[in-house]
Length: 91
Image (cartoon, rainbow, N blue to C red; front, side, top):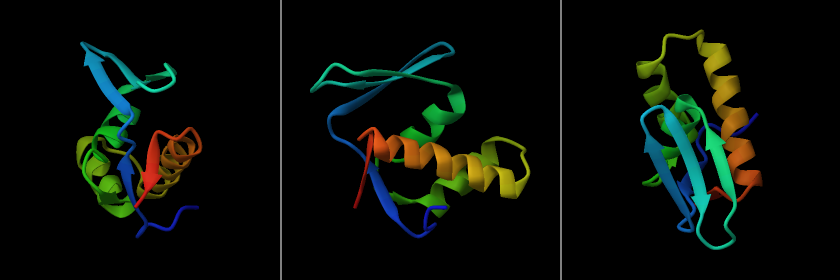
């Protein structure tokens, strides 16, 4: 599991877009597109400014009623995937 105190920020080469219920992350450097659900979009959008994993979990927890342990596990998995795909970068 990710360290909840680690800080991340959205990679400057990533543009987030939302049209109605459809969400994407677009890499303007290499053209890669990532289809997102609304929760993933909220997580990534929360990293437009530097934030800790813990801060983002709080934001998502206020928006969606879900078990705290599951929320932490799911957010950490999404964040790690975004780091692996160079969508988020550690600060």
